[in-house]
Image 1 (tube, helix red, strand yellow):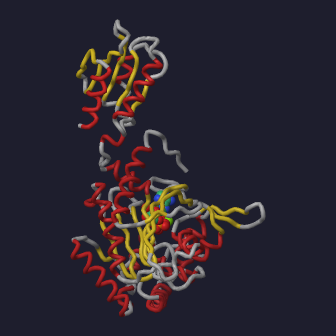
Image 2 (tube, rainbow, N blue to C red; image 1 turned 90 degrees about the horizontal axis):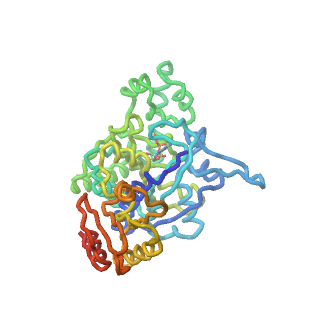
Image 3 (cartoon, helix red, strand yellow; image 1 turned 90 degrees about the vertical axis):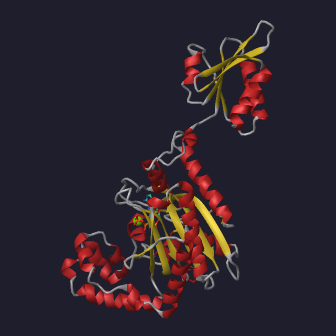
Length: 413
Ligand code: ATP
Ligand code: MG
């Protein structure tokens, strides 16, 4: 679990505000859920035989003996909240959320125990158009962030429950005949969750899977149609994708479309965004049947990617625009008021006032990192008189009105 220090938070804010802009452009509304839920919610939605529920949840007993869990993901909570407040029945909804998620995993680059996701969930729409929309939305975000060339879209269809069940049988039959080549986790999953074996990172299992039956050959007609509509919208929109027949998701509730945006720039932890359709989940959690599709992005991985590729605009990291300091003693209260007048004059201008000793003040001000520095003294007639530095070029002896004008001009530019 990490601290996000002041030096780092501007990057988070930059990402968050870009996401906010893009989501607003698609008419999505933010929903905020609590970070703890009853443990059963996650067991029932994510699935008992998944990595998350088997070994990654932070679960504890409340004071009255009720089992609670720090949320490992947002979808289940979002469905719970929407259902509880009557937002799903006979309605079409487009939600997004952001916040910390918790998984007891082995910490490593791109994998933490408290991490953050920005998620999108839509409800009440069963067509391929909404699948396409959430993918286009994510693609627009990559474009805004300058990432579009660094991520690839992987796409698959998991088909209907029936088709998946039929495929599962075929897969189990095949794998059971080659048990010796399966890694330990996969062997265990053979009975409990065989589809997850497709996701195994073990090289020997991977090799074996090359000869295994493929899910796409078992797809039902409706899912096939749905998938081909989706790919044709993506084609028309010019969104490149790879169909990956082995793409399954680590959670049980997906059907039909699944997708991941993957990068090869971060080593093993390459998935920055993952999602798909989960038409069965609302009913499974006690609601009426409601089609749904969504995705979640890993914020830490996105930030890591932006930093690795040096895609964070320089101005994002500037903590403030202007540093104001007195050049001589006794002016501090005037300086504080002057700074506030500047803030009145230039809305949005970020001003930091120097407090404390004035030794080497010119140097200190210039090392503050601000693009603009204002040093103030008092002239013989008790008027404030300032010097402004902008990129090493001082402008001396400005009256207060001239300071305001100059700073406004720099700021607007
Ligand atoms: P993985 O295969 O990497 O374990 P997952 O299938 O468990 O991923 P999801 O539950 O789909 O991941 O979560 C969506 C996204 O959240 C991931 O693609 C990833 O970007 C991010 N994510 C998941 N777990 C972590 C973690 N422990 N630390 C940081 N980011 C994470
Ligand atoms: Mg995982």
